[in-house]
Image (cartoon, rainbow, N blue to C red; front, top):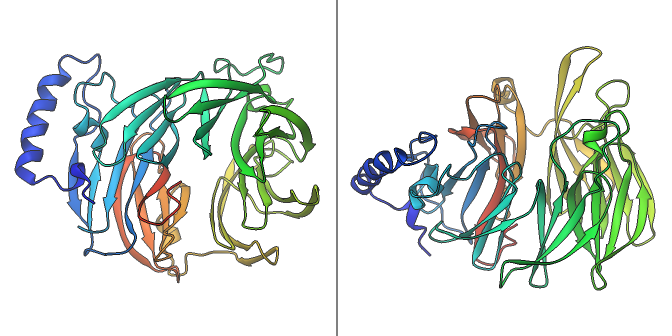
Length: 390
């Protein structure tokens, strides 16, 4: 299968760039990043053809961008959405918060632009848009996309009154067909045995954070339970046995970020890890965890790169980067694992206002290559045959 935006010749790129410069004059803002393509490694042929990387961009700057790495050419292409959609005003918009592939479509959740861009996964042409206020994370099941929404505006106040919700979207029509109220400022969600589990953060209500997981029955699409876990929840991923791995950001003072394992089969918390979490990726029985724990007490970050064996409930590594490259990474932001080769990808947001960097490590934790990205590289979606593309 050919990804048109990642196989374009240098002459065509130059022609398209000239067109983009002309069209940029019609936009409200200048072109954010020059679309470009660089060769970084040799071709590789597996069921994984490549991956998309959504760069969040700085809040308020409309700088979310989409990159693509093509395993079959060994080339990395930056800002491919702009190249494929030169007439779209402000390109992708304000803060890319999540990314997923379902069927023939790529879904980019653009948080502060209150929308989901629906994109053809082969051509990267925008084919639709779903408007959802303050949308956060997306998950797919049975022909539907489920998206968390903060519902209200970005306002930090202990008295925030607007509960969030989960939107149910028909992926055939791209229409919101139902909504279900949950807790305050719901973040990541996952689906296990006919139920949707939603991590409620209450992040706008500091210091009155939420501390619950909402449980939605997927058939009736109603909230049927609330489970108390810890304050300011963020990540929520299920392992192959139906155990939910849930992270708390803490309060950035005495209450530190932690990781929790909740068994949905027996409805009980089975283990708590004193491991900080800012991003995590499930690969089989391995949970890769990046932790950046900021404290307003010390005014410093503590950084970690852990691996949890989800079958034994044990932390098996304190640092999956083994060659010292972690010393080069200023602000680790997200992690992903190739489902076939098991290579590990770590992004560096650097100072949050300039282009970031993507690092590729072998399964043994040795750096293979690195490349420049857009601002705040954050969310991966692998493209290929016979793989789970979310």
